[in-house]
Image (cartoon, rainbow, N blue to C red):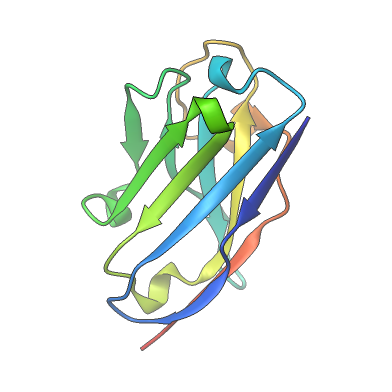
Amino acid sequence: VQLQACGRGLVQAWESLRLSCEASGYIFSLYPVAWFRQAPGKEREFVGAISWSGGYTYYVESVKSRFTVSRDNAKNTAYLQMNGLRPEDTGVYSCARGRKRYGEITLSSDDYNNWGQGTLVTVSS
């Protein structure tokens, strides 16, 4: 099982960036996917997640209305569309698979595994 986050970039405040999470080695459509980020010197933080069906999403309050998580089960890929980026969004973004088939979205990193290698997003002011 592998997940790989792609789309690192250096952007300016208020710009947009889309990250991709490419999955392999399992039946992608049966598991939720979450995005987390870790800023320098801070704990890893839940950003958003999408249910296995794609019908339900959840976001941390600080990114609501700016970020959108989506998935294309035919391509085994999840996405994190980030609009209106702010310097405080800077960090290493990682995607992870829920531990359970048909599992619910949770905010805890303990409920996710198979963490992909993160990708750095830097937002300059």
